Length: 81
Image (spheres, rainbow, N blue to C red):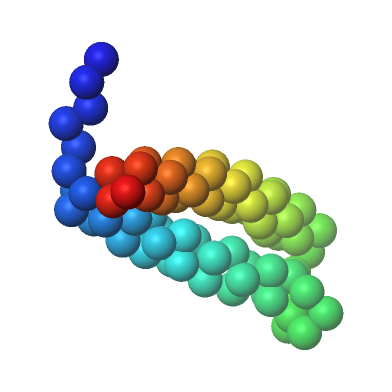
């Protein structure tokens, strides 16, 4: 199978992945701060559990996005020589 992806397309993919990662990290950090020791302290246990689950899910998604980003970087390095 031949991959006709151009270096410019790969750079755009990197840009898009970096944006997604940054946005997700920001959302994740907001939730974590809300749950953490500096939180407002008015959450019940169900809210805390839901927030912690959200943080764990975000971490998993971040891992996938970061792996994808590294794969795109490697492909771009091969094309750029």
